[in-house]
Length: 105
Image (cartoon, rainbow, N blue to C red):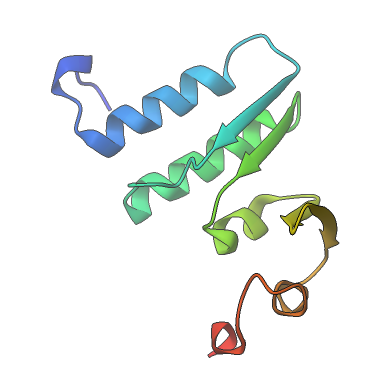
């Protein structure tokens, strides 16, 4: 992406914001809904950024795009009904009421 900021499209600008957040000097970052509005290509670029930066800092992701979150996470916690549930596989999201059975179709 060799564009001036004013020429960036919506998902390109969002990607830049995420990149700036991830490349700051903090030891932990919280990404709230980082996949919202991203094209599939930008989603993959964001995942690469997250993977790269997770080697040197803690990253907490809050997002409803559970498939992307599950792809890149080392630990998954579902907060549902005021309780934290540690998740190891997609079936547990159904057990905890986050997904219905059709999610496996």
